[in-house]
Image (cartoon, rainbow, N blue to C red):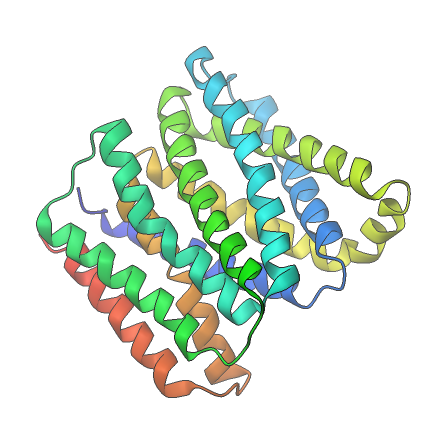
Length: 280
């Protein structure tokens, strides 16, 4: 079930937002505080939306709770992957593993079986993304690879959970709003328990940058969840993870980072995968 043009454009915009807000996190000195601020902003933005829409339908409640728990584990794996390894290796590996796992999960759980050309397209997208790991010059110990792989697994799990949850909620917008509010309160509570009272000045220090990143993250993932309520989860996931290539191209073309040829080659492979995946 290929994405309609308007949904595909929206998901590509979400991928751009994802690449941009991750660049804010990358330059931060306290990643736990950055994640807490981003989630907190998402919760604040979602509160008025939740007041204006009906409550999510009862069948979506298990998905909401499972999503929050999975996101917390995802943040734990992501922060540790960045702790032990370079961003240039961790990020592409984590994001590149997600689309094929989402495709398998969506097929098994939601019976979203893919056509052969769609499987080839998703494989091309993931290969293009993961190829950025080989072209990266950074390093890190093996723990970073294990945590990156676990991060990719968590991305796939919460993607399928949220895709199904939005479909069971009655209105995707109500699911998105309550998911953001529950996640914000949980992540802030975990940050307080882990860091203690010093987390509050760290949050204040990160507030200006984190607020901008939080707006981007909330809008971007909201678009993705809404798209998954209307289209095949594997398609949305693969298109969303083009954020990795967008970030790589920004680094090469805007920031002047080395490695232009392999990054552009990876972008072409991903573009070919998107075309094949959505071939009618």
